[in-house]
Image (cartoon, rainbow, N blue to C red):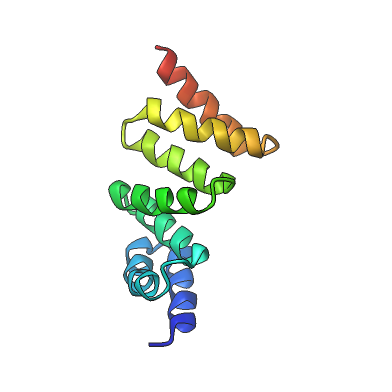
Length: 120
């Protein structure tokens, strides 16, 4: 198994709009290299894009646990929880992401959207 070649193919699948195909290639890589954050992040994004939200959450929580200062993992975890209908839980991660990287417009928009849902 050529892990680097598989990772590159998975990236191409993801970028061409096939997150399920990307995930299939990434799953064995993450088993072989569980500490590889780049692979885990792409796997989480593939799950998110293919609406496998439980699997995305699992990967993102592993990223956040390993590196609590990963603002992008917090943001995508927040978006995953929002999409799963759990805005109260999402809000915490979106706030953390925005606090760490407040120049990101996507972070601000997601945070404001979820804050509006939680206030209702």
